[in-house]
Length: 297
Image 1 (cartoon, helix red, strand yellow):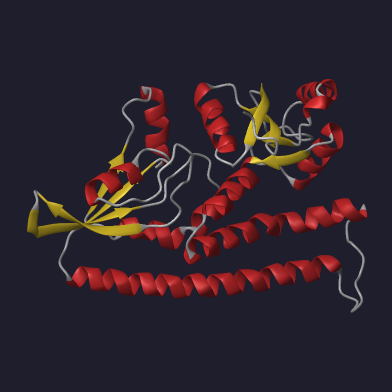
Image 2: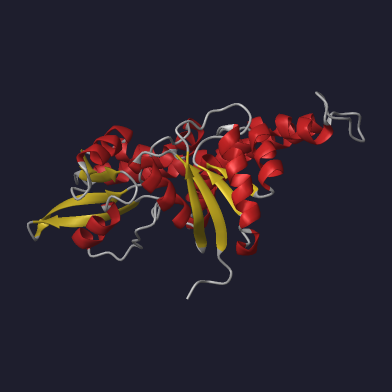
């Protein structure tokens, strides 16, 4: 039975099978999200709406024709500017979410550790930062929004507050990074080899990790189930005197913005200190999909 509280959405993505399947998986990774209709577009870098004006009108007409379906959101599988989002929302009368916002929403729903929550908070700030100026301009209809009570421009106050928040989060992440380095040095003193499991998101890293270490970390077909690293010792050939340290890591995904990669830098660095980096690939996928995922890693 369909969840009465499900969020019903329209998805706009590229027509090739890899991007189409990945976009669907991203949306369906959010709890209670249901895709009502998928529109495909060869190019999503047009100036006004991201997509072509004809496609935008087609979506507008679809929403009107299916008003009884209570569609709430329009998700576009590409980066959109604040102005493009504003224009699309005005045309479609739906909340518009681009690919970056979608991934951040998934990250937020998955974060469980203090460090992963801080990393996502930093990514959120970096997502908002370049959009503040354009949002203010749209709201005020001028190049320079008005002044506040202290004579300062409102936009400057907002930007300064974001900078303050960014500095605060970065300090906390730096503290977490130092703790991680200390932990890494302590591990090195044990002389145990370190093996990091890396690969595309949902490639089976955590499933293999659980199998080898007899752990019970959460696994799912959804993307980005793992957002923090976990390390466990593993006996080799059932020899108690022969062990390695196995590390489960965050998965990769195509077209991930640099600021999101930077936000997870301290976590990703866990792989760089390994004696062996083991890249997992799902052999059940097509050669072309494997090739795309391989180069994304």
